[in-house]
Image (cartoon, rainbow, N blue to C red; front, side):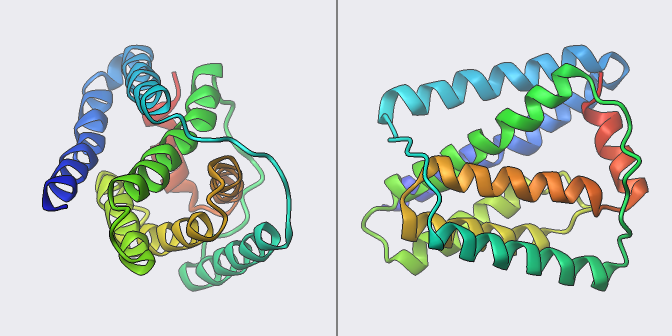
Length: 199
């Protein structure tokens, strides 16, 4: 089991390393974004083919309960950090949109499905905490967002996955969270994120 945690930790630190290379090619955002996209596709594809997670689509009371918690949490954080509603989003490239759609799926595939699979002998609480912690560490390259903030959202996603065992629906929850974040994020933070990812 310790071997699995070390493996998961090492893979988690790939995220900041990947981002380093994306920023290294910031003058040529297209190159950095293509690298990022290829890593997501190849590594995500490996997990998907090797472990064959089941994808089920279906709304139920549990999904809407967690969606409500997510939105309420988002509103509280927005009020706490004074992030105003921002309807004027910059024009986004097709490559950015592709990353925006694929990255949450890869994150759920790794931080929920794969982590839970590797830690199957741990308690549910242990899996949720480790999953959320690794999720936060993977976002260490986003200091403007805050690791505690990311950890708490990781707990919400992991708790939902622990109860539903539904990878597709936890991805949808994550995607809804990211869409809401685009509209309730500090404009300066948004410009940093867009300039990093947008070609």
